[in-house]
Length: 223
Image 1 (cartoon, one colour):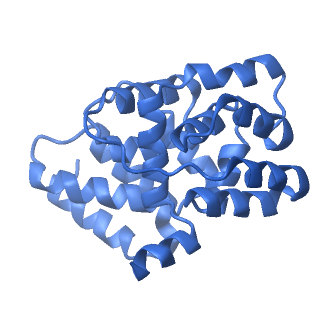
Image 2 (cartoon, one colour):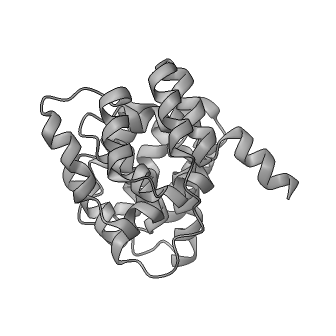
């Protein structure tokens, strides 16, 4: 069995190969979920940071496979598990929401977008265009907004709406106009009431920081 030093050296080698992102993400997750006794604790934070970055560069299938393994691992940093929220199965999503809800501290200053303008865009823009407009309104990359809208349970959209301080009526309109069509419309519309407010604000703030829209990034750099 390879030593911790050998495993870390192997991971560094994979990190240098852009084509090995899937393998790197899997091995980083293996290391974090079963931390070896001979591996220095000081290495945990760099491994977490590298996994969080690598996951953003992998495909949907890889993210979903890794997300399914996170259940019950409360020792993992919250920012790391937040990165997996959109790819996680329902039980892991619920754990992530509850961890965010129980986390202390302010979620951040999140201004509500103009609901009337957003509703007009939802009625008139094609899905890709709407994701760009919605993303620009809330400071989140359009591809992340598109993933949120693609959630058939509408829970992710409920998180974004509550986190951005949009009301239930706006959530319902967006779900019906732009959300992915699930089997049970009533269940999708009820998702709004199942999402804790503080958790929604924390996740929305996470997306704004780590999945910022191009316009939002430029505006922040100019300040």
